[in-house]
Amino acid sequence: MRLHDRPPRGPFAFVVRLPIALYRVKLGWLLGSRFLLLRHRGRRSGIVRSTVLEVIHRDREAGAYYVAAAWGERAQWYRNVTADPRVGVGVGRSSFDGIAAILAADDGRRLLDEYRRKHGAAMRGLQRLLGYATFDELVASTPVVEIRPATGG
Image 1: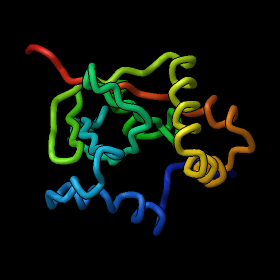
Image 2: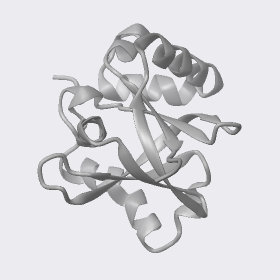
Image 3: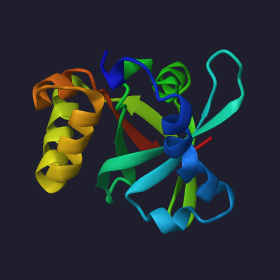
Image 4: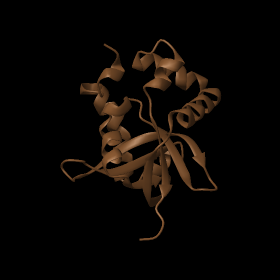
């Protein structure tokens, strides 16, 4: 079984969730703009949940951030934003209300490939950690989500 086949549990889950604590005590800025805090509503419970995600690309002109669902379509945050795309985002010292949209597979692949060129060691580590033999295998199972600032009411 690959790690990708199920979300993190036990001590690994604790480590993965530690960055949320930084945002809760107003220290999210320590993570810079490479990570963001995503606030999303539970698709069944309606409870606001928080997840820290790595930013794989940023479009400064549009104010958009792009994140990858490393645990694929089974990731709870991914399932939640698919059901309700209205999200809250914290990046560095700023925050905004946003709208999440799932990218087409080709667009997601392009951004993941760009990320791999810029952060090769990190991508190889993630690929190994999640149990993928090839980059193509990882890309096929990893949806990419665009988060843009919400406009209007």
